[in-house]
Image 1: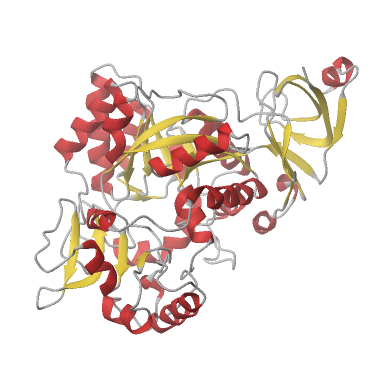
Image 2: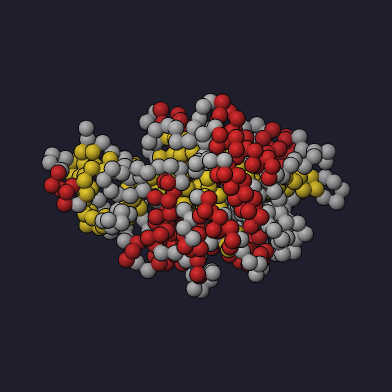
Length: 518
């Protein structure tokens, strides 16, 4: 039995009955006493004086793609590109440093920010990299930009039909342009697997996540990621709590294997099944009740409603929790319709909507009434505010409305959607309380009525994210909770909001053990 007394003059507990304390007594990874009681009961223990200006509960990213993040850390980053030519220049420089023939499968480009406006296609990629397969996901992951070599290797031709919920974009002659939207991206599954082994990349990503204060994640990538985490766990190399979601394509396998919600242990457990209702705003595939400005369609219903309802029913009947991606107001309405059906049938499964970005005000009350969790990403609001105004205009939808959600009694969990956004939760906390970017834009915050307090934002990144996967033993620094905590270089409650973004994590502890630095 190990006993450790953690001390610091400013420990923020997240527990309403004792918001701050100065000591935590931890026994076998669990907090057994707090404050004066901890000191009095300590006896012969290891004493750790934590560094920095404050100690917080460890933070939990409720929606992350850690395989994407891990591979992106080793790939080319096109997010900073401000034109097509700039993106191609960055890609060419990256390709010149790679071994001959090595596939390029990162990118995160955002053509909405390119000036002058340009439409990417395979021909532009071919001018820079023609001798290897190139598959570049957009920043939101809902569009892929590929070169001719990739189309050929995947067998995508003018005769390839569009899959349900997806589009192979074609030119005036019917030839694929190199742009694949939504479910058409799955056509790239015919390509050989990426050459870089995943596990060492995930271990590198784990260090990054711990370094920014994340002690738990809800991961929504695939079975390769699950296998890599399981191997890390078996070898004692898993140092962050992973709630491993199940992709829709893997649902049948998961059910056949007997996976159930929460199954596993304190470090690695089964998370929710993820479905898709629509696409994304930046890819112009969000499913709206009215067309986006300048577009003829109302977006893409990635999973037709009857299929979505049937698969959700199947998942909850098998004992699994469900989370469903929904960006547009129509997508959110349809997901709530499906959830209402399974609730009426008596299901008590945890039901979540991932993103819940643009919602009819009348549907916010349905979230609360049905007990549906809004799993949201604050940095999306500040990254997309100009795009949202351009595409949505003044239509009556509540956008990135975490204030309205909380006021209505909706359970809210925060995350990053990394690598779509930076996984650093302090960037999300800043966005949640200011609705501004790093440069202070827009003045006063975008739709400032939706700002929330720092207490509320931290709760969404701790208790809210934990409860969204059924965990009641993490999220607070209180008796009976697991000792997941971080020491930071400033007290977030005692600095101006812009300074939140620059918070540095000095030490990360998971289950009473130092996870970083090691």
